[in-house]
Amino acid sequence: MKRAILSDIHGNLEALTAVMKDIEEQNVDEIFCLGDVIGYGANPLECLDIIMEKAKVCLLGNHEQGALYDPEGFNQRAVRAIIWTRKQLETESEKRDVRWHFLNMRPRKYEDPLWNALFVHGSPKNPLNEYVFPDDVNDTLKMDIFWGLTKHISFQGHTHVPGVFMGRKFYSPDEFEDGTMELMPDQKYMVNVGSVGQPRDSNTNACYVIAEGESFEKPIRLTYRRIQYPIQDAVDKICRIKELDQFFGSRLLEGR
Image 1 (cartoon, rainbow, N blue to C red):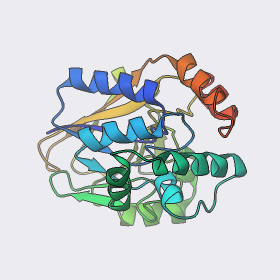
Image 2 (cartoon, one colour):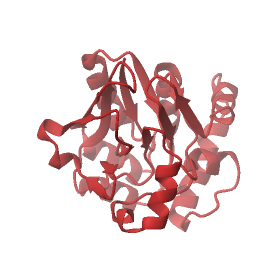
Image 3 (spheres, one colour):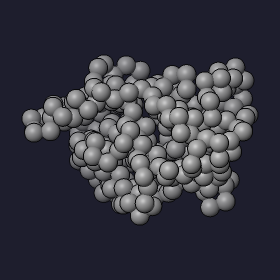
Image 4 (spheres, rainbow, N blue to C red):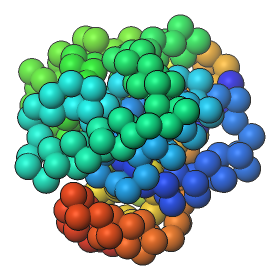
């Protein structure tokens, strides 16, 4: 079983298009999306349509939650972006009801018996909203809770910072040879797959992972993929929309 696992697209069509092209070249069996297809970027509808068509599993992210209900817990720039995104979703079109139905039906988590894996947007404890940052390895209580809820592997996003938690350590993809790591059957892991549309690890390239393995009883091969895309095109689109703060564009140029 070979899966592409991606998260946090955030309406960045240029990044998603480049990633999808790379995924096609990898000959994957399934595509999993961990949420936040929309928010921040200029093309929420187009990105949503691609994921609706291509992904076997798509989870609810906090930005989908904000568009569906009230955008609680967001800063004012993000609130304005969510309100603008909601207006795009409400625009009359033949796909409007299909998109809303799709968003309403998104689960908060997905459990996979093949790999004994949990797929979430946030954390094993709070699948929708909780951030798990690299520095959290120093919070013994917090990590103990996460490991208690993880059978073998938890795949997650939300922070936009890629890397693997194992025990009391966090490993950046730069620490793996060729960005690849084997997840062993006798260990527990939390894997942050990074962000397609808004990387925040000082690397401007879109990020997602390829995971390949037969079952949780054998090693699962994990590879981080970093994909170049026309960033300036995405930035320019954001800057042309007055409801979207230009910061959402400028940060793409710095990977933050």
